[in-house]
Each structure stands twice: as structure tokens, then as C-alpha cells.
Length: 308
Length: 169
Image (cartoon, rainbow over all chains, first blue to last red; front, top):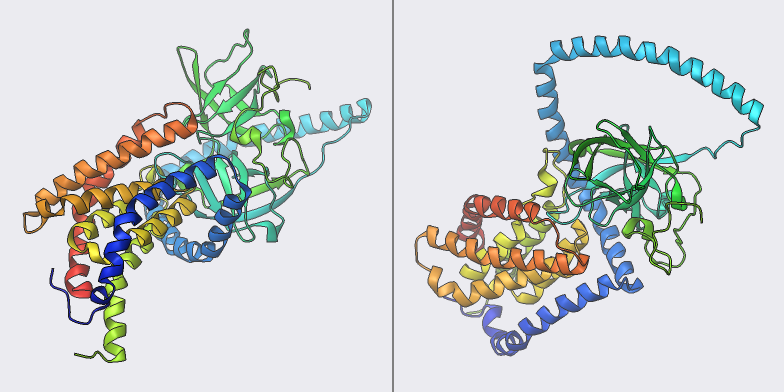
């Protein structure tokens, strides 16, 4: 490769050859060191991460807009195509839902009456923050989404992130102008849940596939296909009763849950703030362990599943 | 021969193009495009760039810049810090050491080189993720991502060739 006379590569040649001899090994070692530091959850690394991500979040925000609008255009073309069948389906759906609405109204009235009778302490109402997803790629090993709201918008660690369909994950990293949501499909996501029909407690563990697994079910639990899975509220991270998905496969005791959320259209998410502190200690800077891994007592028993 | 300020700026911009392009690709690999299943198999654009420039213009891809780009990508896509940096360094190092085999040969040979070198780095990444997670991670997404990356390599490399020819020179 011919070099131009006077180009800075010529001037820097001696320096560069000296540098390149050590640089490579040094940088490899540096990468390993970074990985270890990251694994050890050093606060400095965490700050560096959120700081850089904060600076870059406006760039991502701008870039994600055209991408989303192109995807929208494609989707609307497709929708136009099967408008008629869609309409028919919606009409049937509507009829069905109207019947449900009657049932719901009756139950609501009944519920209100019974609550009054039983002197029930109502749960705290939730505040919420809506934010746009500005980055969602994690490659083969991470399932997370970056959103354009941060501590400036009163986002805290541990808030539950939902779409209209159901729970998608929890906030694990908060910068000033961005936050990162660890999706329930991520390898590190473990959420206390309950099977809605039987109230059996379990943990929903992600494994980087689209279908997280239901683990740590009680011995005598009887889960069948089509069971709804909701958050149990144990561990005090997520509020109870948020819909997550339905059981769609039971093979050799491995129970897979198909989340309600549509992962292809993660555009806006809502962060629910129930004022729960739970096991998340935002001030100490340690990650919320009910999200990053199951919490264990000293004897190794899993916590967050039963009464403390 | 002395260069005027504009010429120098022009030259500098041309020489900074490869790294700038890699930075852009790192950012782009984090942008959601709303395609079904895309986010799980985002091709390793930066690995392609690292390989291409390591073979054809290693002087314009200093390892340190590549390291910084890798860390940047780690932050953007939330992989463990240093992981992408390490894999890019591996691709760069192997490609530079073997570049004589690809120079002036048909493109298919360079493609094959990328297929082999990227296989090594992808396997290394999978191994590291498994070690960090303290359990073997399901290899399917990694394999799929690898296949998508090596399949798309000619397309992206074609773009690099254009840029190499008309911008970097």
C-alpha cells in the first residue's frame, strides 16, 4: 500500500511501531479487565456506562425515528391488505368483549360491595411514566431495551415496564436521560410470578429465547396449557397481578410461557410506579437482585417466594 | 511537498473514515428497526468492518480506536463491558496477521477468511458469556447471528469497497 509523502502515518511511524508491539496485548488484557470489573458490579463502571449511554441517547433517539417510521409504513401496507378479514375478526371480538364487559361490571360492583364489607385496604394507585424505546438490540446474548426517560423524569431502578399487552421487564439501569429495561426473556431476568388459576407461586426465568421458563414451582402444582401467568408481587419489586403471558408448552417438566408482549413492536413502554421499594436499594448502587438473579437466604433457599 | 490546510484536513477526514464508519455501524446495530426477530440476530456489522479494514488498510484502523468502538458498542447494546471490544480485537489481530493471504486474491477468499476468523471470535464470545453467566448459554441465537453475519458480509463489504475506493483512496 503506497503511502503519500508527508502524510501523518509517516511522521508517526516510529511511535506507532513501538506502540503496536505492546498495544495489542495491553488492549486484550484491558478488555478482560473491563469484563471482570463489570462482572464485579463496580460502581465506577456502572457510572461510566450510564454516563456514556446518556450522552449517546439523543443520537439513538434521532436515529430510531426514521427506522420506526419505515417499519410503520411497511406494517400499514400489510394491514391495508387484510383489512376485510381484520374487520370481521374485530366485529366478532367486539361482541365477545361486550359480553365480558357485562361480566366485569357485575364483578366490579360485587367486588366494591365485598371490599366495603371486609374493610379491605386498597393497594396504592400507580403513577406511570411513558417512554419511547430508542435501542433494543442486544445481539444473541442480551435482551434489553433502552428508553428515552431517565432520572430526570423520575425513573427509578426496579420500576415495572409494561406495554398494553403485559409486563415486558424491569428497569435495571438509570441515567439522567435514559434508562435500560431488562426484558423478561433475558438470561438474567428472574421474576416472582404466580399461575393465575391456581395461585401457585413460581419464578419466571428468561433464557434468551422468546419463551421464558417457569421454574421453582411447588411440588404438587398442576399447570396446564393455556394457564395465565401474572406477577405475584413477592419480593416487593413488581406489583402483583400484572399479566405476563400464557403457558404454551409443557415438555418433560419444562414449562414455557409465551409473553403477551409483542417483541417486534416495542415502541412505547409504560413504567409503573407503585412506590414499592422491595428488595431494590437504589441508594446503595447494587443491582436489584430479584432481577439480576434469584435472591437466596444464607441456607441457599430461594427467597421472594414465600412469607419472609 | 507541503500540504495546505485544506488538503491536510481533507486527508485527515479521508483517513478517519474507516473508524468513523465503524462507530456509525456500532450505533446502527443498536437502533430498533421493528423487523420481526431482528434484535436477536443483528449482524455483527462492526466485526465485518474490523475485518475489512484490517485486511485492506490496517494503518487506518489502530487497535486502540477499535477497542474504544467495541466498548461503545458494549454500552449501547448492554453486552458485558469489554466483550465486543475483545472480539473486535481478536478479529483485527487475526485478520492483520493473515492479510497477505487475502490481498490481491479473489473476493471469495477474503469471504472465507472472514467466515473462519469470525467463527473463532463468535465462539470466544459465546464461551465468555457462558463463563460470566456461570452456565452454558443456549448456542442457537449465537449460531444464527453468526450465520446472518457471514451471509451479509459480501453486501456490507461491497459498500466498504466503494467507500475505500472513492472516499478513503
